[in-house]
Length: 478
Image 1: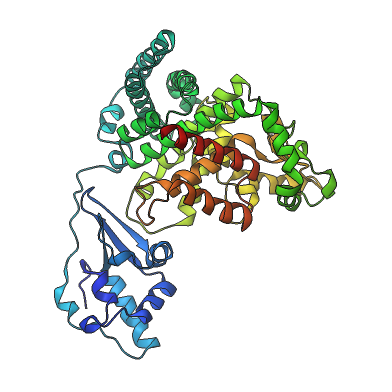
Image 2: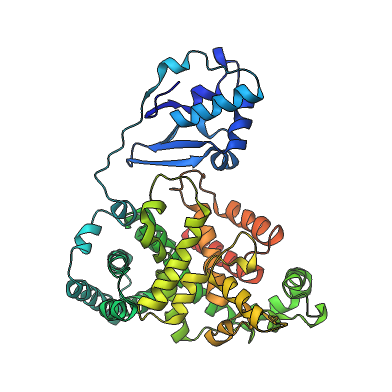
């Protein structure tokens, strides 16, 4: 049997002796026991422990394919597999592969988790004084404003400016939030005040630039490509697509033909979906204005900027537990759920970011109350229902802060937008450990089937508008 620190290639464990096929009995045991697999990426000096079932569900032959990731069974995993095999099958067969084990793959540990998540420059920003951080952000906001004044059309210049300012701002915010974790709320707000002000100005300036470049997919790819660190790349992509989509949405709904098209097809395409969400309302009374409180309308500029801030800081809750989110631990739903609560509490209690941004951070995994979702909104609603009898939401989505805080609707508009963009980014991200990146149409098809038809998680009307946005970007690129 393997020593604790030794490993054996997964392919050797799952192949029958003499190459006579795959040991399906062992696969069944590993699926049932969710035995962890050590995934090693030598190119990026990373390793993660992921349950076999998660990997297998995505690709039933993942361990047989050549690529940047290698898969190993640890001494514990092999012990667990042998124990269950002897109990279930009455035998244990590993041929001579046990003779070919090796010490646990060595991975460079010279990078901190923050560097893995946010890039090599993170420690430089973390060591800056609070005044230096604020001054850095101020200078970068001046840079963006100069581009706006000059009305630059040079995509390389724009990409460089947006990449630098987005990356630097994200790293500075992470460093500040990590620093104020243990501060009293008032002390934390005072400490983070200038960083919040300059971050808000940077988001406003970059959002204005992005609004003028909605379909520049090459610009966005350039920015994302230049971003360093896995979390930072995700933040950048989601923020860029979020702002661009809001601009696209405004363009679309300002056209009466778009709204008329949705109204005309509402009964056939959407009514059944919303009837399930609002069962207390007669089916014939459910209209587009019942879905969106106030109807489909252009987003005012002040809301646009506040929501853009929320998109930018949506995953800031990972700051408190970056060791898990960028570490080697197996999937832990409680830790995953914690990141929205931590982010929500940090933004709403320890900073002066607008409440709209805080709600986006906290609510962006609610999924219309589906059991797979999580977040403080459902907890607050449950508490509210315990105090106020017969509480029901008469609308699906609201644009304004007051209505969502008063539980007049099931969801907050920017959150339903972010859910779609967040899922799409996850499905199309080529850097995901256990999932092959999907092409555009494959991802959209999967989202429609799994998140609208099979489960009521994302909004079908917003999804249709988003699909048009993504396809339009692809067409412009071609």
